[in-house]
Image (cartoon, rainbow, N blue to C red):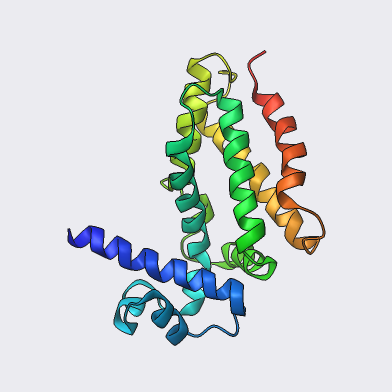
Length: 195
């Protein structure tokens, strides 16, 4: 029960922080604002995070949370390629509508310079577990080529998503991330489709 409560508290803090970052900007959001919005305490905040900057890497947890939220609604009989396209479309729609360019750019820059954890690369994340599950299932069904490993394909897919997000950031969001990905991701998936 304690572990579940701890996970809930951390989740509240992360969700409140990203909501405030989006609404008022990163620089205008204080730890006190986050504590108040999350309904937690400063002690809880500092138990999980060294400070506000430590929250930047938690954006990857929001991505995982979105995947967890979406998976129960995915038809198990759906083609694996269609599952990947659906998850990408929904994730990028969420990013476009709730994550500021500034914060996404800060996430990428923090992952480049950190000497600590690189959350985007953490293969134990929900994101990677779901990708591996869908890709493995696709290989078993003969929908995805099997001359590459599940991990190789997962990494290729993730790199394409990162590349799209990175490009969106350096182009200052002057196009729809979700719509552009809808034209690019099928090209990637065509390269892993079983012939």
